[in-house]
Image (cartoon, helix red, strand yellow):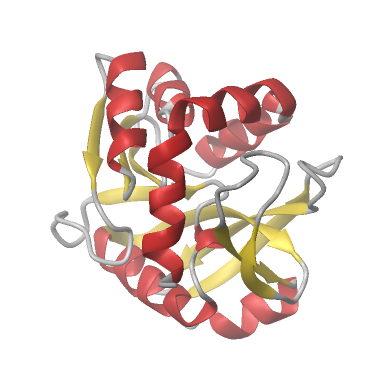
Length: 206
């Protein structure tokens, strides 16, 4: 099975159910705290991109707080759901490894629980693309599952629909990132659907 195509197919088939479960069982209060922390590291009214936006809840929150933000997702059903839920916001079906945006478009990129669905060798493509579309000294904020493994899993969120997951230690991520310097990290205070998550903020070297 192709890891990315299979994962996106699973999201397409259960987009609404998945988003309902993650909103109900996730720690939204902490998520919004992390979004605010990201905004504090950026200029006023920053231009931002939400990579792997899902149903658009983070995109909408960032816009409400003054960001000029667009959301992208590789899942067509997720993009459709985001557009229906947040009609005033901009969402596009795009691959975070190769987007339509010109060089130096954004001040910051936010990727919440999205790089975790890519095989580890694909991370360098995401990093290169984020580096390209960010202005000099741009901020890359993302969350990841803490661990060392990667592969297909069927978890309690959407049983029967396999998704690919990559787990990282902070040391491994630091080694893999060649275009950004890690500024800060913060652990999620509780496991989400059985997994430990960490948030990371990294600054572009250009």
